[in-house]
Length: 211
Image (cartoon, rainbow, N blue to C red; front, side, top):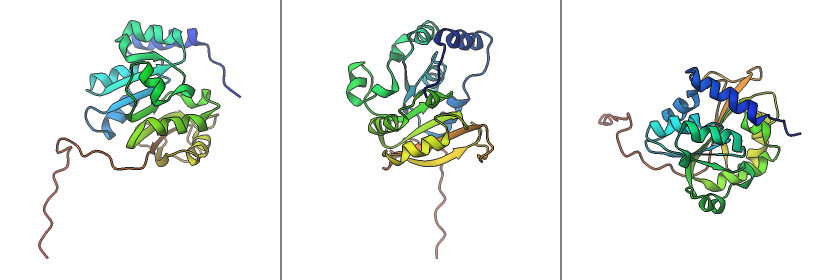
């Protein structure tokens, strides 16, 4: 059963967080840590756009889609409105993204803040995400564990898609996940090689010792 949501109340709550200076970028820091510079990111269910804004500020090519015009109105007031489109996750395809003037392929797709809880068609959404991820691309999901769209539903959706589970954490700070964890952060990937970094990327490999 699809969970109800009051878009107007949600938009007002999230705007209040922004106005009060609440840190809403923990998912942004997580993504920024594990992807290359200037990665292309699609935030599904972007809400008022705080993650998209944080990723753009860190040099990533980030865009957001959301099915609610009320929350996107706030996103457009707070940030660059060209970053956002009115679109449901169930409509994602290379063609629909291109029609909206967005890139067709992404290095990262983000679903944060319980987005899967509102997607009864999660299996279809996983398939659609697999089609717009580049080879080696990743899907990152942050959601409540014991609700619709939690890890169990994600794993079932993953089985019929091109994606595979890489890691699962109990929070955005790499905390250990187990069946008692109230929150989950799951990292899925699409098979294929990731592009080589354009900089040393923190790796200064020592030469192998002679035999």
